[in-house]
Structure formats: C-alpha cells, structure tokens
Length: 168
Image (cartoon, rainbow, N blue to C red; front, side, top):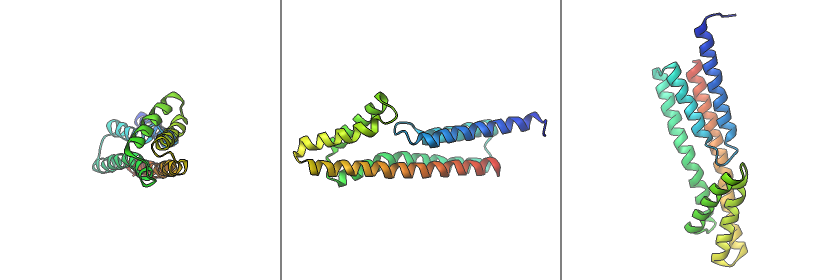
C-alpha cells in the first residue's frame, strides 16, 4: 500500500472531483439544479489543484463548450417545442417564470408542475380552446423531456472526458 502523501492527495482530489461530478450528473434530474455547471466547476477545480497540462486544457475547453451547449439546449428545446405547438412567446415567457418560481418554492418538482400549468392557462386565456392549449403544453413537456436526455448525455460525456484527463 503506497505511503507517499502525494499519492493520497491525488487520490483524494480525484475522488472528490468524481463525487462532485456525479452529484452534478444526478442533479440534472432536478430542473433548476445547474448540474452541467457543477460538473464543469468540478473539472475547473481539478485543473486548478492538479495543474492544466496540454491535454487538460483541451479537455477543459471541450467541457466548457459542452456545458454551454447543454444549458442553451434546455431553454431552446422547451421553447421551440411549445412554439411548434402554437404557444405565443408571452405564454412561453410566463411558463419560464412560473417554472423558476415553482422550482424555488417547491423543489424538486415544483417547476415541472408550474411551468406547464402556467403555459396551459395562458394559452387557454388567449385561445379559449383547451385542445389547442393542451397541444402547446404537450410540446413544452416533450421539449423538457428531450432537453433532460440531451443534458444527461452531455453530463456523461463531460464526466468521461474528465476521466480521460485524470487517468490518461
């Protein structure tokens, strides 16, 4: 069993980084939890503590690009799918605000309930037709599902890239 303190420091840093990345990855299940940012911050912390080699800089740059894409995909997909369903931009904005407030007031599922409800009510008030309102709302929910899948895959890729960086 190694007794070198540097070895144990490196093992500790890698273990804490991996734990933080797994928290970020599984935190993606909670809509308001910034899981990709947590994974990215864990990678940044690892780089600061362990040092950035050329491989480290390349991988960290890739992780940064993936984090930005994943965070943009979240809002773009939900809004685009709701828009395809016929929702107005005002209704989509109201749903976004309701989702944030719901997530803060009743975590972890408050946003998942309040955003579609707000969209449905706003669209019903605008159209006076529950079927059209439901079509827009279901589009938002489909977009939410796809954005979760995409963000989770991106989180897995970011964690895998870090593993290459840490253990290569």
